[in-house]
Length: 125
Image (cartoon, rainbow, N blue to C red; front, side, top):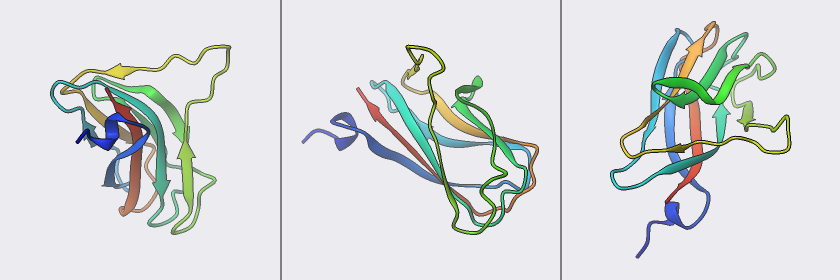
């Protein structure tokens, strides 16, 4: 039976990410023999994000999927935010990540809590 992550958009990973320190946290590693296209990131707060900034992408280019984003508008435990690239032109450039690529969320300008849930969505082919 085919992996459901290859037949449509799927939850690729769920990871706890601390917004209490500047650091990169690995969200997902593309499986061997596959490529991965990301669709969105969902964050569910464990505490106020305050002025925390995040970016998401390959470990070698941490803003190539989601550029630096201020989370200041989500400010209470269990608040949720969807981070989805929005095209500014006719075509939105996406990335297809090769097998073995580590997808990370990098926290900068930390100011939030340590128990935030990050859900990564996309598909494999």
